[in-house]
Length: 295
Image 1 (cartoon, rainbow, N blue to C red):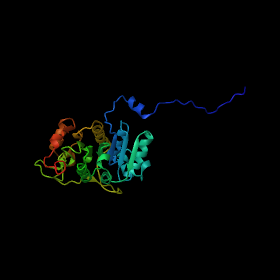
Image 2: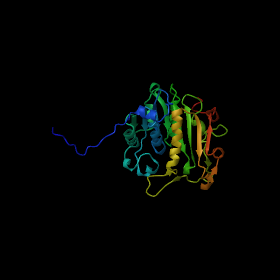
Image 3: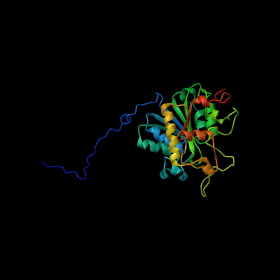
Image 4: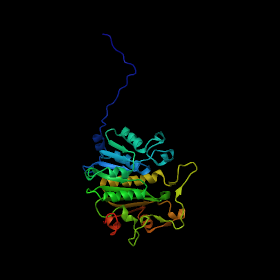
């Protein structure tokens, strides 16, 4: 009988690639509740890394919210790269994550977190496991927290931010219908409202400009590196997965505020004495007269 000859034939190996199987391969049991939708507000250097880690955890759905486009100035501390420049951050981040994990549901909104929140009702928010605030804009995040307290449902919130020069970072976790919130951090030791967050690692009596500006750069930016962003993102991801509450601060141990002409605070001293990490429960953060969670 005539035989058929096949050229350039390559043997392919079948591999199991569905998401449930791959998650089981990590050996980590799911720690999330039945509500596995996570909102990430702010998809910059911190938020994009949080999205990366949560995409590889037991999250069913990510909602990405950011109004900015990717710029070349961002690539040295962002999950996205130069190939994503001039695309919306949420759109490019969604595409990149789904290339790696096709089964993950991702919804991208190129808008402000406040606009998205206004469009939600209590029933819709009840489906949310956690909201990550990584906008880097305190007024926006404070307003988000205030609005969340007006809903009848409870949502876990994890807010993360960085100090200048990579001196440290903070993550605060709390429930939106419980006592103690982000606003509580904006009161001084006497319980009076303040424009400055009381957990800062340094004070700036000389009024040193903390932001940097480079010739040709679109604008000023806060100086910190990719490692600092990822370090904070890891803590945020842990807070989300484990529904942690309280304040977790970290500080650099190889450089001090004084190196930049700044004065270290008691919060910095406490973190430094504990190997660079300092945790406080919500009971230590709560301000009885807080205009957000005490009303």
